[in-house]
Length: 111
Image 1 (tube, rainbow, N blue to C red):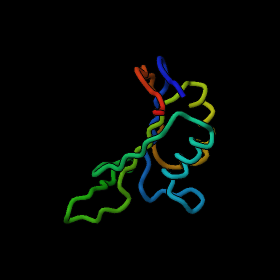
Image 2 (cartoon, rainbow, N blue to C red):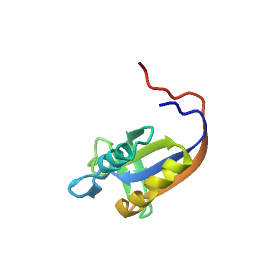
Image 3 (tube, rainbow, N blue to C red):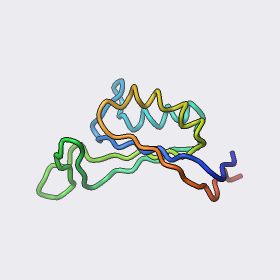
């Protein structure tokens, strides 16, 4: 697959303990994106953060490291991102979802 030029970046901010049908939500999102043949997805685990309720989540030694921030990033064409959005709307009941325009310089599968 070759993806270059104008695209969209979908960012999904959720918690590590969020679930979708008994599996981690971040995993369910990545599998749905793969099922819909999006270009790719990356999950990042944050060492610290807070959300709408202002509750601090951190990996600090003296605090419990539960429900750390998770960020799922997906870049693809606007059409493919829009096809994924109804699924994201259903799956993400708490968190934040953003979309921004990006310019892809290079994305190619090796071979």
